[in-house]
Length: 465
Image (cartoon, rainbow, N blue to C red):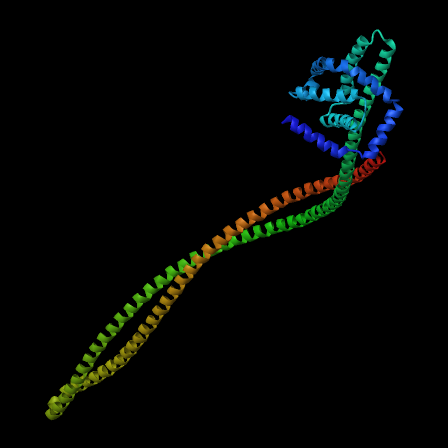
């Protein structure tokens, strides 16, 4: 699996950073010419390879032991050491082949690209090369210790080849790093442009918000001031209303007292009306008794009148008989005449008495009618007085309710006055808060301008860099 991933990584990197054939050829020729690598260099390397090939496994074992002693490098190697040893062996074989062809150049470039990809810094690469180079130098010194000139030439060729190898690998590493840095710079520039655009929008909105906040603060301050003025007016009006309501309450209480007195007087009037009704009834009864007595007197008078008429008739008969008797009946005639005169006077008197009794009876009947009318009128007055008493009672209840409501209204106006004081205080605090908000909004506006200037300077410095 690791081998597959490594091969895939190499293919991706080779396609990403692969130079053209002409560019690679010119680069290789230029490097070799500058480092004075020629066919003789390749011949010296190939001649030394026979010794290197036998010693290379031990050299690589020592190399990986040395590398594994560094925790960061050991973490990069992991369990991939067998494959890495095989790749190292192939690489050194191409190096000591001495042809420095396309396959060699491509392989070394891949080493540099992979090092960049996995984050292996050149210092570790150079340090590792130094370890292997020291081993190779020791091997060359040992092999050519009796041929100093040959040893010097081999060491020079070995050093040149290793320097070329490191040059190509590190150049590829740097190219990849520069390419990545270029991409990072492009991403950074794009991010800066995006951030610049967004920051301008944010600053514009912040400026608008600060201006809006300042406007709101001004409106809030004006509203608070207006609220204070209006609450002062309302407080005065509520105080006046409270005074008026208290006056109404006092008047209502007086009215309630007056209504109670009226009710009492109406009740007394009702009682007196009842007494009058009773007295009228008793008067009617007395008058009716008087009428009955007058009737009885009339009956007696009628009897007397009848007796007088009979007496008169007897006197007349006596007078006639006395006249017949002559002189002997003259005295009786005088008596009869006096009796007759007395009977006539009695009849006349009883007639007058009858007329008076008739007048009394007529007056009695009229009195009975009047008394009955008075009784009916008093009864009607009693009903009216009763209705008035009920109305007065209802009015008293209503007046008491009005008095209670007026008292509650007085308390309410007092509470309103007290609350208006709280509103006035709150409006004052709102005014203070609005003033502080206005100051803060002005500071925010100033800070926004300062931030805009700082952001512009920052982006100018970024672009200049």
